[in-house]
Image 1 (cartoon, helix red, strand yellow):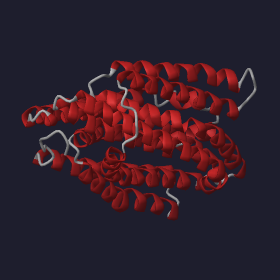
Image 2 (tube, helix red, strand yellow):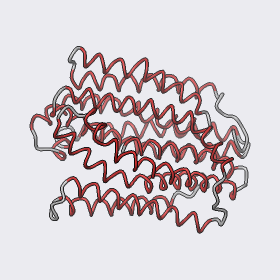
Image 3 (cartoon, rainbow, N blue to C red):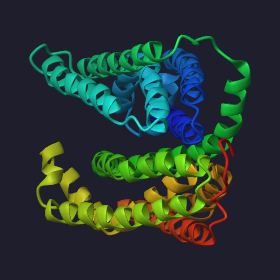
Image 4 (tube, rainbow, N blue to C red):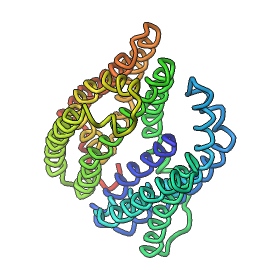
Length: 381
């Protein structure tokens, strides 16, 4: 499902940048048209992913999990949860074009409402009704489908020009190519980290998943700064105002740093209690204690990285982002975690790799930000 989220992020980010530049140039209709074509692409991709999951769930889960019972349970969950992919991707495309036209209220309502629905359904289906993991998957599918449907309805109300345009879709795919490669590097890192953690035992795998999901949660929260940067930087460059774009970049970078420090403080304060929210297993909590200093220490740097990611995506400088991510993955993260496996360094070694991945990206993005070579004017880069 993280692959589906990856595709969704790709669509949202690519659509935001293109729509924001057109909106900044004063052409709202063209900005919305980007959302129409992104939605067609989202729907087709989501259905394809759902179908592929029915065939590939078993082999994929077995490859990632060292324990057969864990693999079987994960495969069963995935076959159901994958049917939420079309709605998830439609919601991502909807977020993209709405952010591009500076509409951030409706996406909040649509996504928050669907997640509240999931939060209510999940415990009810899992425990009182006794559906177990199946109930969790059904809750996800329901919420994602509702969210995607709301974004689709908003698009239909916005414009009557709903036919697919191969020309625009191809242009979006060309822009998305670099985001796709960048996203593939992320996925290779996360999947490799999970595979290595799984080889250190069930307790290590559980602790890794707790920390990784909290990392993703923090990333999504900190990504609010990056998303604002995408929209505002894209609109400023589309309107031909390079100085405003650079000022936005300076402010969101500072905001990302402050937000990252804030999350680090909260994580440090919760080090003794937060892992217990997820499990009562003493072995898992012991492994989580190994991860926690890495989790806390990296958060301030991650806040800056996410903000600069947003600046570059809003500017359409995704080719550079692709190269940065590949360099950090191939020269930093992947060698580090596989060395951790080879020398049995445990979760500390895995998260040291994540730290190296973050620091390499930070240094290269700061250099690009200072150069201002990303600030290219025009409705479309």
